[in-house]
Image (cartoon, rainbow, N blue to C red; front, top):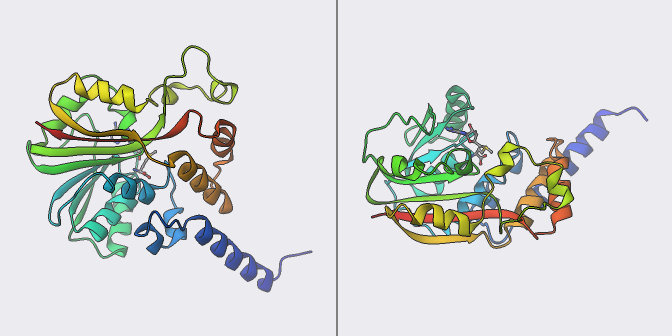
Length: 263
Ligand SMILES: C[S@@+](CC[C@H](N)C(=O)[O-])C[C@H]1O[C@@H](n2cnc3c(N)ncnc32)[C@H](O)[C@@H]1O
């Protein structure tokens, strides 16, 4: 049957309803206030707002603090941080055009508090000691596994400033034999998916920070899968990732959450 305007409208309504149902979680009340269509518009990693809210379960930001949102992608998390926690955010990313982010920032009326910038995490264009905290969502593993990186990043924090991130992870070392659903996806990007134990050791041995949290986000596997299913409602091409998570059943895959303070 050819589509009619009525059918199109009905489909759009039911997609919006499905999206809202899929992306409303009691555990993340602040995220639930945001238009799901806006959140899935430019998906990159796991749900950026759920990740921020799960990080804020262990991290405290005070209004007016200067925050570096490192690897902010489409700056969805940066806008959310400014609006929900009253902080001033430098939205830094390598691949996303800061002009696109500026458009989004202006639309949300936070142009006075969110500053988009193209930045390579290993060559940050900021003054030493400038930030109260670094937040990184779905991105830290791209640069942070290098042994010297934390020491470099801490230079941009005030004394006792904090670094917190949530990103894709394995909850333990799978050893030499990967399960088939992971083996078939095992490209270099995946090599940086590490466990909380790995990250704790990676940071602790620097003797530069006190670690407050090194765990897997409770329910993180489920959050991630639910997010990918929601992205599928609007055909964002995440079916292979969703299949991988389905096959895993939370055995290995999830989201790591790290928080530490500079000594
Ligand atoms: C999976 S996306 C997550 C984006 C966003 N934080 C989110 O949650 O939607 C990873 C982001 O890390 C950024 N990234 C990767 N390597 C980077 C680097 N060396 N310096 C700065 N950003 C980097 C990419 O530009 C990309 O936007």
